[in-house]
Length: 150
Image (tube, rainbow, N blue to C red; front, side, top):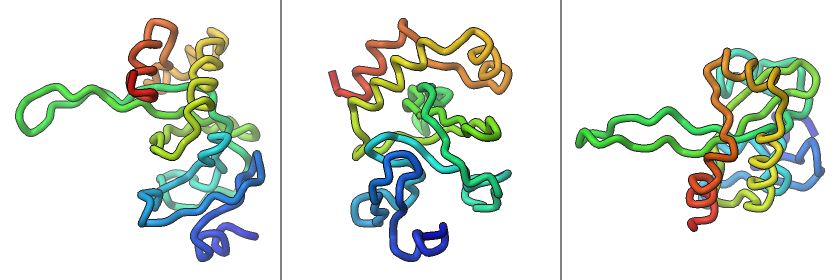
C-alpha cells in the first residue's frame, strides 16, 4: 500500500513493526506520523513538515527525547516545553522532531529515553549543532513526570 492509499484508508502500516496504525480525528491522531507501538516513523517529508516529497521512504528510528523550547504564554508565564521524540532516518540520516501522543506506548518512550542517554558524544554534538538538546539522566524526573504523570 502506498502513502496516498494509506492516507485514504485513514492510517498506515508501520515500517518497523508492521502493525496497522489508524489515524482518526475522533481520537486526536489526525497528525500522527509515527507508530504508537514501536514509535518508528517513515521518512516521507522532504523540506517542510507535511510536504510528502521525500523519495527516501525509509524507516526513521526514535533515537532519543528532547523538549520544546520554553515559551511565554499570553499571561506572561513561562511554559515549559513538551517532551518530543527525535527520529533519525536509517538511510540518509535526516533528523526530525515529533510530538508524543497520548496513545504512544509509555514503556517504549522510556526505552527511547534510556537509549538516548547512551548516544555517542559525536551524535550528541551533531544534534547540538542543529540546536537539538537530548534529554539525559539529569532530566529523568522531568521525563517521568511528563510521560508517566509521576
